[in-house]
Length: 434
Ligand SMILES: C[S@@+](CC[C@H](N)C(=O)[O-])C[C@H]1O[C@@H](n2cnc3c(N)ncnc32)[C@H](O)[C@@H]1O
Image (cartoon, rainbow, N blue to C red; front, side, top):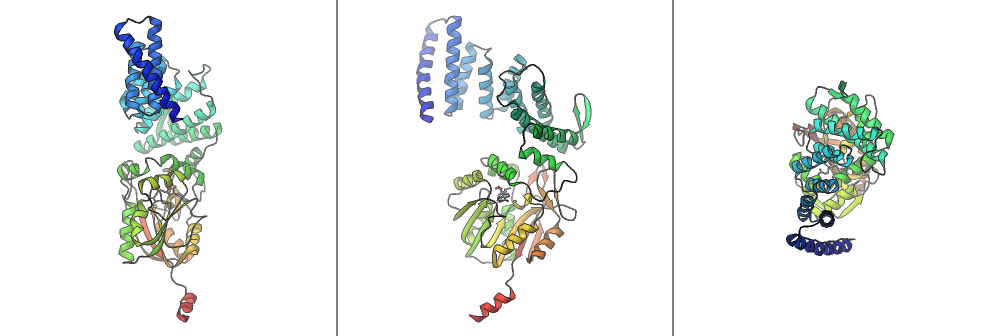
């Protein structure tokens, strides 16, 4: 595939150089102008596949200087600006196309995603509404997609998310649809339901649950978590540390050190290892370090960022595939479980005697747990402590660590817990026999 692109780039570069030489000494006819413009566009598109985006930009611009009305070239140019994170140029590019062709759904839909990514939720809402409306009229949009239902389902999902975030930022609960005031949560529920009707997807199902009173969820579905982190893998760590100010992994290590002084030579298992931030902290006390994670892409990213950090990588659910160990560490990964008892029970069964568990959770009020609008669970402190003790753990310590992560400018409330599996009396006896 790469060889094909490279040979296309090579051939098109020769043709483009010849065309530029021709232009420098001739005035092209109208049809030559169109041909040369298309040649530059094709060359730019091949360059962008390499990817050599900055050179692609030059040739899209050259192409447009010859044929300014080509919508395709304008669209590719805007896409390239978007890929190069030149967001305001990409936005003005899409707006220009929409002005020329109001049915250009790809531009409208990309414009919506751009507003969403830039956290301009109010603009994203309006733009998603226009994108959706394009598919609901009798006139088909320009270049309609093959899978209209799939595209529309995705648009409704993103529309729903924009409404949730807009509402959370402004907190007045009021949205406008077709010049009418409507409750934002109702509108978001409608959007997720429409998305599900058009094509089932775990994301819309999940967010619809977060907005539906009385839905009893004990655990976020593995499929959703896997997809979330597969999609997020590439930017995960940058976003977690730089945008969300995540420091749970450091707090866990410091708190463990405070409570369990010294120690080493342990078989440490990192539950939901992500890119290895927690594993790196606990490497020092380990004889062996294992990672279990649902997301294959995040494991691959972990290997890229921290080669050979773990001795073993297991892709799967840590509830089902837990292995024996002396210390279980879990940073920000139990927040996808509501009911913690099955998980605590499983850890108690597989943990060796005198082993430890160290984990973080988001803290909430109430008596047990709650699936919040963030799509994650929060847990009452008393519920966590009681559940640990019920399955047999001895709680060695826990503390609040509010601000261990920031969400849309606000400190997330959280706790870190350390518990131990005490030596059983019968095994003490057996040991005494040696
Ligand atoms: C927010 S990330 C935290 C990563 C890492 N522990 C850290 O603190 O940087 C949560 C990770 O837990 C993983 N995860 C969540 N539920 C899981 C499950 N049931 N089994 C395995 N991995 C899970 C996710 O795939 C994701 O990589």
